[in-house]
Length: 322
Ligand SMILES: Nc1ncnc2c1ncn2[C@@H]1O[C@H](C[S@+](CC[C@H]([NH3+])C(=O)[O-])CC(=O)[O-])[C@@H](O)[C@H]1O
Image (cartoon, rainbow, N blue to C red; front, side, top):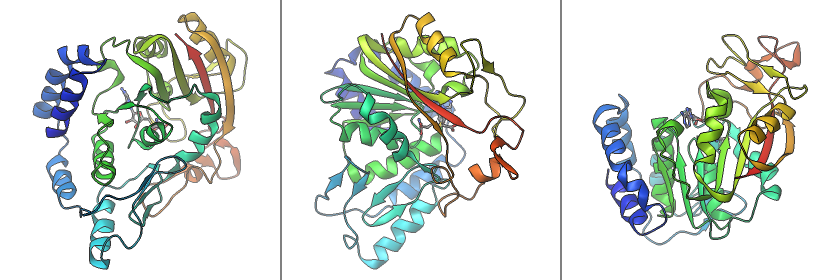
């Protein structure tokens, strides 16, 4: 909880101070009633991570990298690797921690490279990443100059992975809170809001778009990334029980439909800036996950289809202003 106390102190004196009316009660309720069965175990793993004595160099501009190989003794390095493996599956990354390459299932840097040329300059900005996973993109936002970076994600293992990386980078301007988007009050305080890979998990996508808008300052920028299908402004796929073996997938609009939804919700300057069919080098099985990956989610005889026969994952990035 100490980490959240520091966060409360920080926001007490910045433009997020109004969040203090609801956040401490929410997070203490989370801590008292919702901790994952493995939480205490994970916390012990975090506490056992080795510590560097001297300040390490941090590179967040082209990668997420802290320190160098050789900063730790061989024994400490082995301990670092074994402890980090206890937080498997590592889905979003990669991370380079004192020479340890956490080769995650996803190359999240590919997504960052696709969006970076199109977004407003983040220098000095307050940014929010909704559904941030382990927080890979939070670090890249900070690397791009953001002044204060907040991520929210309800999956507690991802909070642990973030805390493990934060243990080494130690940047108080980057924070992850264990909250779902539906738990956010209307903060109207962020210059840029990112919502990537989340819309298709929401049962009410239009309500979701209003929730995102409510976090932005007037004129602020939304960066939304989601799965799309081919079609016109009236095309939306609602898959059956599973899509690419995922159970919680609801709405896959066409690019045109997604733009129309954003406009209908009152966003302006709506544009689709990138379309990309997910390739097998972006999402793949590595030694940092024990589960299946994209290759297993596609039709083995036709990689243009999911195993259920739907169009294979195609993702698009949308930018709009409040
Ligand atoms: N109610 C919710 N509120 C907020 N987040 C949620 C919610 N429910 C689930 N999530 C979180 O949304 C993230 C989606 S993953 C995208 C990660 C990153 N953004 C990426 O673009 O690589 C993509 C995928 O798994 O398909 C997960 O971390 C969930 O815990």
